[in-house]
Length: 227
Ligand SMILES: [Zn+2]
Image 1 (tube, rainbow, N blue to C red):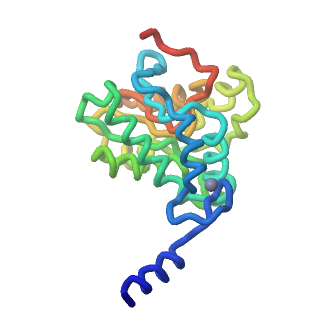
Image 2 (cartoon, rainbow, N blue to C red):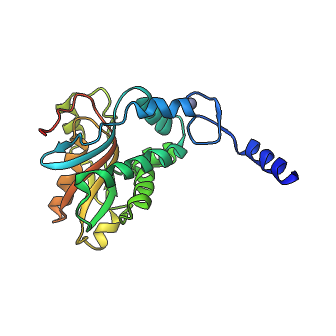
Image 3 (cartoon, helix red, strand yellow):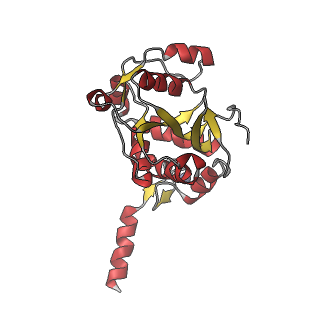
């Protein structure tokens, strides 16, 4: 009896506030917000591509997913990496893209100044959870960001590409030794593909082959691949 009361007490202390609606919850996200998020989930079998590479996306950017990613990055809620990274891992494992086993995950890096300001790299946190879930190895610093670019938000596709020119370089993990495994790039959002293109170019320039991409959210305007 007293044990039950004690557990009840502990549960009370373990309750936190949902970062989206501020209601108290025992999970990272409240029940209603989780339901809303599931509406953003891409349908099974829906596939995306970036220049002949598979892009696995958990959801379509918008609604509750847009709010979650904003809370995650700009409102200091790194704990959101756990559900989002886990869902991304599940999407990866259930997709037809998940076939080759010899892969290494590389998060899209943040510039050190941005990292200092935010306190964490959202792509790295997502990649960490993703790798726990998929059992893929993680090269935390496969890439590095050498130029502090202006935010991509609001820029045209052409400006995004120009903005990113020379923004990445090989990171310390791969400078030491070029991986034999193929790379899967991990990011929070895919919109025009400019970031992925720039990152993949740097890796290929160093004879590192890039297999595919995994992102939590993909932009709505992204044309669907046939089939
Ligand atoms: Zn909520």
